Amino acid sequence: MTETRDARLKRMRMRSWRRGIKEMDLILGPYADAKLAELDEPTLDLYDRLLEENDQDLYPWVSGAQPCPPQYLDLLTEIGNFARERHITRA
Image 1 (cartoon, rainbow, N blue to C red):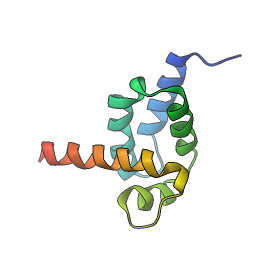
Image 2 (image 1 turned 45 degrees about the horizontal axis):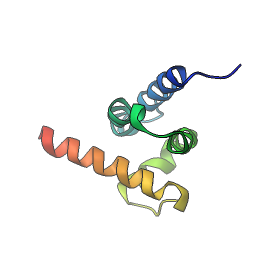
Image 3 (image 1 turned 30 degrees about the horizontal axis):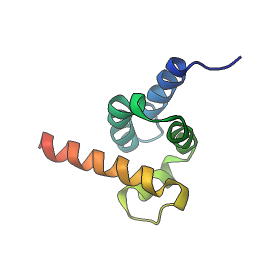
Image 4 (image 1 turned 180 degrees about the vertical axis):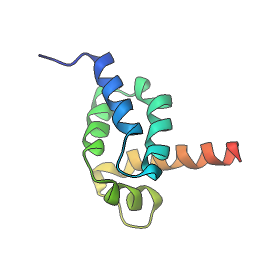
């Protein structure tokens, strides 16, 4: 059975908010709420693969503490910028 786009977005949003560490919940959750619906299919596929990565790897990549794998660089740069802008405007 094929997953519908709506079901896929719902699954990905839930997975974005229910990570292994709270820091990643707070980075990926708001991004997913705001941006997932407007992403094209190739970017959704990439984001879906990103959700399979361990948080212990993701957090250093998105924070810039460690180099990010090239396939995720553009997406994690966008996610990191979104998180920083969101934090700045809420402060």
